[in-house]
Image (cartoon, rainbow, N blue to C red; front, side):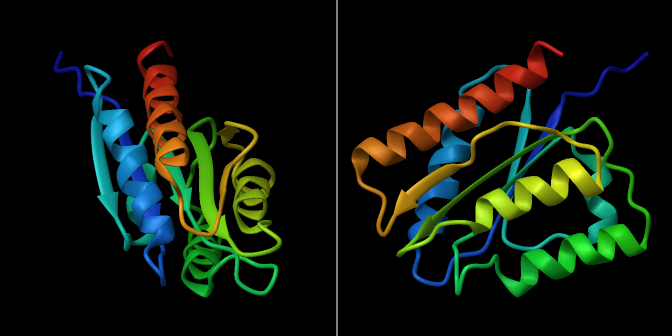
Length: 150
């Protein structure tokens, strides 16, 4: 029997580059764990979500909400009945003043899809500094380790 490695999707949206910096650091951290595959991207089809064991979403907060792209992806996944039950879910993002988008994403993952979410989400105010990028690497590593110990 061929055993495939657990796969982590790090999906992000970034307009200013702040959430992208975080996403890259999360991916770096996840890649330090042996025995996991990591895919970092800003676009994925709803049907592809089921191919991953963990889905980590990076979204900035705009006007007290997540981005339309992230919203559409989850709406489409719900419409097409994409089964994500029991998969690991996590979220992170940058914000200017309110920062609720990653929490909204976790709520959708947990309540709509029955995912096993890592709480709380990781939030960076404005541009992530070196200390925050280190937290992002740690965040990615923790999610990857959670998969290898499942």
